[in-house]
Length: 323
Image: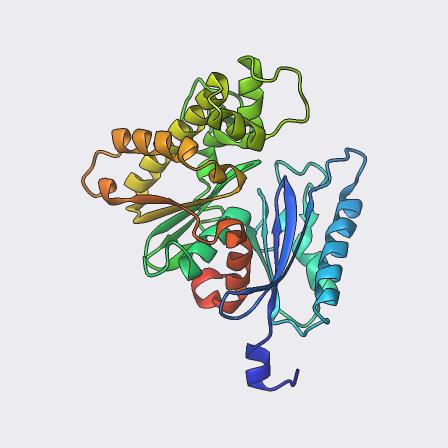
């Protein structure tokens, strides 16, 4: 591709989504269309160290770019589970123990010199994607959420991404929804994440007698059994939905939201999750302005985070507030 301004504008962004369950990557065109995709399960081998995990990610990215004919890139955008220092993006994802203070942005800059490399929380990328090209398009005040191995969130207010003091604004996963609830990996108790994240739900259900002792079961299995009418599995989904509804009611009262878009693996449970969520939300969102909020599945589905990561580069005037 020629190095004209038009040529540069047509280049794709290499978008990356790093979570406790999967590592996904895509080439995203300027309009938000995914033109190439690859994913792997996030390695869970406890013997794998930080550099080994980086090499796994690097191999995924190298293959994706090579398979696409090694196009010139407009930049690299990344969503990664937190916490992290921001914007330096030294990452310590709660659900990826191999990385503690790992210099993700610096490694990517070394691998892809000469183009912007922008890293943010994975849930922040979901809200950027949904506001840019998804369920929040045309709205000014949107909360995006990821409900998967963890629970995270990001905020767009008055049409612009809100970072907060440390880049963690909107992190709804650590809103306390039950002060007497289960311990959270953050060190607190009763956080939304401790109750509604997939592995936490599975553990709770097993304690109640659902598939006890099985190590190979996931939130997908739990949702499938809930659809079949298993009472414990159905109770687990109601438990997650109720916790989400309470947290969203609090966030809506605080931020005067119009839309909440929920992505992540557990969001695919559909009515099993969204019905008890709506019930709890409407019970607790009592102010007139808060009753206007709409809670919807992420319109971009499992590509929300990737498209949002690309938006950090393509629409940086709205979604990137550093360097």
